[in-house]
Length: 136
Image (cartoon, rainbow, N blue to C red; front, side, top):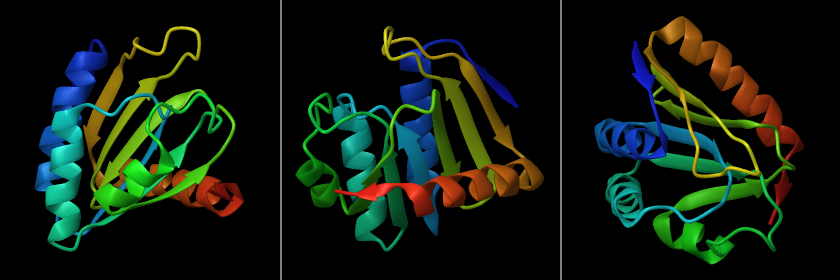
């Protein structure tokens, strides 16, 4: 278990976990600018066959990364209104959950778990949200 103190710490940990991914990487984010290092990491893992899916929880108008950017990274993307969480699930074993406040998008505090039962529960949540999300 690792505590995440801010957005930069989250970005660094997410990048490391992306690069470790072997099979799947699912995540819910605000849609604000994805750091270049994470874009590169995502491109690397999708190029080697890792399945990546993203739920963006802002409107297309407030999303700073055009949907095409996600497609260029090899990520399938859908949209939901704000659900107040950033969530990352790696290979069904590791989960990163952080806060998300639309008024303070640069803020992020949370926790990283490497525990399959927690990952399974969070994956169920992701799948439930994925089914109701809108394809853009």
